[in-house]
Length: 116
Length: 116
Image (cartoon, rainbow over the protein chains, first blue to last red):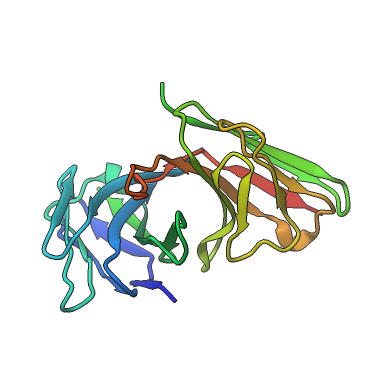
């Protein structure tokens, strides 16, 4: 079956530091890849996505590149802010088996804390 | 405003007392899903629905029921709650294109359930 492995947190960084959160996946076929972000007390929001190999998703200064050869989708940001403090989830979607089915598999989440 | 609305946000109940968590979306999405979020385990899918009157089990369906009588609503029912169902629950929805590919999920803000 499909699986997503992301680095365990928590991760604590100073403001303006460089951020990398590693994510690797196992999937059959050609999944789409996502990063979701969960701010305190809220549901998950889509941060960025990539639907095929070598695609780069980007949003709010965050980037991730779909690397099929290493089955990875690492999240990066050049200069984090206090407002980036949240839990980040890597996820993949697959058509699954059977017509019309849909599978979305999440990693366990990485908590990021950015201190001034 | 496009949104997924869950109610209640917080619920404390006792073992065995039936409860329902409501979920409603105003985006005319075909796909809806319930997840539970637990520390160290990430998000796990409970049930999902591809369309009205079509529901299927996710990864952790035991102890839960769902129904999809209308497109906009997807309630989660706990017939006899137990303490191991204490968790943070999220409802989510997405649309599907003609090729059956899903858009990224829209999440509700969560329901924190405590069963004593």
